[in-house]
Length: 160
Image 1 (cartoon, rainbow, N blue to C red):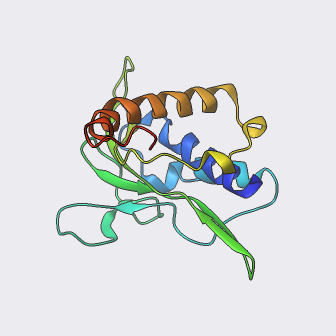
Image 2 (tube, helix red, strand yellow; image 1 turned 90 degrees about the vertical axis):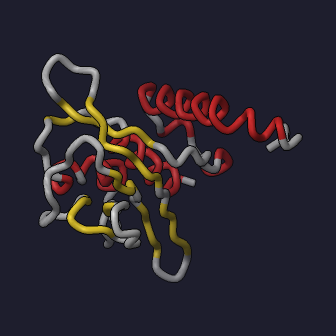
């Protein structure tokens, strides 16, 4: 539960980050790792990769590695921090996000998560989350309900 929550915290922190335009993904990648780093944990894979034009699973040059291009509005990327304990378990939370202009005075960017898949609430330790992270989660669930809820009701899947 703690590992899942810390991976989720990193996912949220990167997803809600506001950063200057012309910033490379490798510059902001540590925001996805911080909650794990706080307790001496890490993961050995990239934090995300581009998605798009040629239908490649990991489309370069967008992503969070040191050799990726600066992020620009209109780019799609995955945001997928994780944690793995050898021989025991692994956690990876992957969202798909669109790089968009932030609501700021100067031109800054942020991410808009477009995958709209709920997280496993049974694995979230709310006591580890900041008030901002909880607000983000609540807003994210409201967005899911608004976009996916009508289709679930149409299919008579209210419980889901």
